[in-house]
Length: 351
Ligand SMILES: *[C@@H]1O[C@H](CO)[C@@H](O)[C@H](O)[C@H]1NC(C)=O
Ligand SMILES: *[C@@H]1O[C@H](CO)[C@@H](O)[C@H](O)[C@H]1NC(C)=O
Ligand SMILES: *[C@@H]1O[C@H](CO)[C@@H](O)[C@H](O)[C@H]1NC(C)=O
Ligand SMILES: [Cu+2]
Image 1 (tube, rainbow, N blue to C red):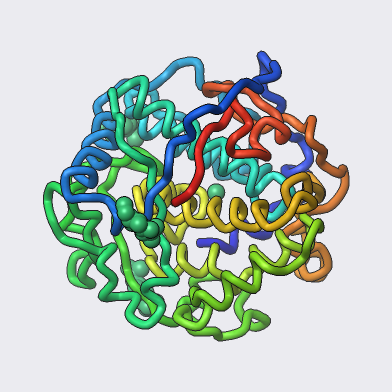
Image 2 (image 1 turned 180 degrees about the horizontal axis):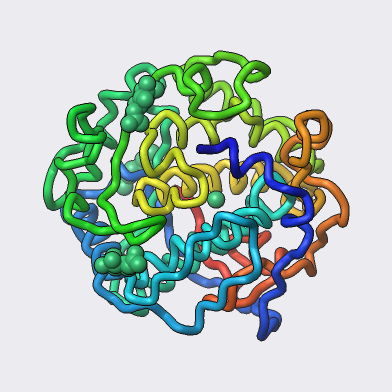
């Protein structure tokens, strides 16, 4: 599943999508919202968060979404899908421009913020955004309390082999996702996701167990390292056998397929954690806070190129004025607008 995305033709990756209506969005941030660890949500808060996501499933497609020319394999847009589906579609469409390059962290920060705005403005949600601190679960991932089977407040567990791994015990069990074709989400746990062809080509990927990747020590060393060097930080953060990819592959099902992975609401809690790791690194020093660098073209044309450029991308180089690709969906902003979570355009902290 990862394979056909990872080794896309480089030509397909060169056209970076420029959003329209670009304007500066700084302003005062007086009372930042606090993003909470999911297990720190009360049961009522969990239900409210889930209901807000379900509300997006009941809202119609937004016709302002204008897909950009993208890689082969982009499914046609389904205009009878929901606003939630649109949100997934933005990720599918822009996938080749926002992974394994400098935009990975800024883009996903914009994406989570856009989701937060959607649930607030479209659905009246007033509760916190969340994150999944998987370091708490390293010793017992499959039995993690994240995978709580409750029809009102639970994100659910894993499906069964005799039922195509469709998740049945969660609050989203009846939620139909339209991409790539209508279905309800599935999950298929693996403790050794790097060792099971979940990510190809496999021979060069260390056969690390996921429990050894999502440890507090791994995260701390990423946060403490590469002072002032965003590219170095990003490379350490997003190694193929690392916690970003590893958690996607461990959960399996929708979350494992990188382009459509936002179909599973766990995506937003996993990426909340990734955004938090960046935030914690930025908090380490003024140099980190201002650091941003890397290339816009993912170095994915060949394995040799990937091993050389890793996650920080190739020329042309990105800068603070680089637009965040948005497929004309919601705010058009630049990297500089999302660098600081308390800049004014953004206004949040992590607990
Ligand atoms: C589009 O999405 C809707 C809602 O999920 C679904 O009923 C319909 O079959 C989809 N159309 C196509 C062509 O997949
Ligand atoms: C579920 O995961 C196992 C272990 O990785 C794999 O062998 C199997 O093919 C997967 N099944 C599906 C339907 O994804
Ligand atoms: C959970 O919330 C409590 C109080 O609201 C706070 O003291 C604690 O630090 C939070 N836990 C985490 C993991 O942030
Ligand atoms: Cu992504």
